[in-house]
Image 1 (tube, rainbow, N blue to C red):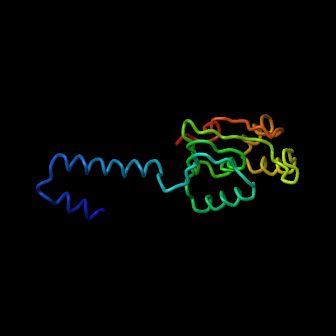
Image 2: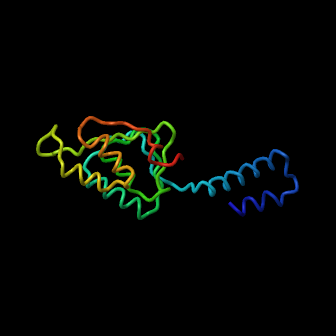
Length: 153
């Protein structure tokens, strides 16, 4: 890319249109660097699954430093995304998080106190406090704007 720009700039027939292209290219590169744009994980509609699967998924993401961007709905075990270091995950303005108590896999439709505690212990303290007060006692999903707990992208 640098060679392309050098050759482009050396050319004496550079037009104003060409200069605008170069300016946009440079501005885009600076903006991408400023906002920390790196390839990342996009969440559009993730309805969750097993807590252990999501713990493993986010442990891998944490270690690679990939950024997670929530664009839409992230419910159930997907909300373990909140365990990532601050700044590694962000949310678009319309993104939502959906919380509920942990399910008992042996007795479908019943709350598991053990699974609920495991989930709560994964969350940061502010989320854990909200979770216990608002969503930890029922399997009905309680939605909140993701920007309540994550920075805007």
